[in-house]
Image (tube, rainbow, N blue to C red; front, side):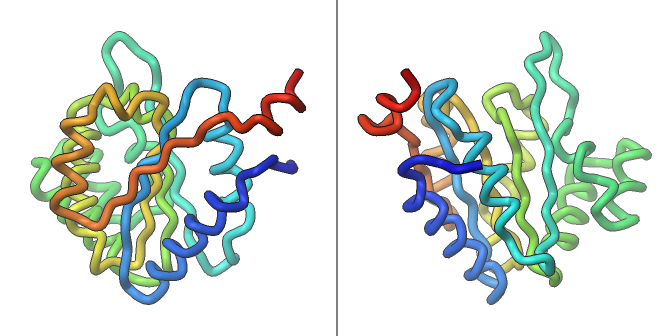
Length: 181
């Protein structure tokens, strides 16, 4: 898939992943209006990462009652036995979040993508906040894609103020818009 005028975003994501490979993880909050190409950008990026990078991919669903920790459940088969066991046992958040952090702190470098985070349940938001504050010393780059981070601007601002987080908004560009019509 060819993306128009997205080289800057791809370069920034590759930079975050290189830092994670050196044990300097971080989180990218990616936002933009519906249809601007956030998911396409993430799929292209995930296809460009080296084979040595573990890619964890989870999504939030537009359910009236969202699945608690839905994205983590999506990713769990590629995570440690401890994480899978704690999810099955409905362990305390403290135990589970610590196990996830431990899993993400170890090599190989990991790309953790959470799609449609605007549909996230409160437990997933708590996990994101917990991880975002702790990924600075992990081998993980977390990318959360959301159509409406401004709706949760206080949440993002509080998370960013205490951690190594970047917020990027993808906008339609004149060239990209003209090629769509």
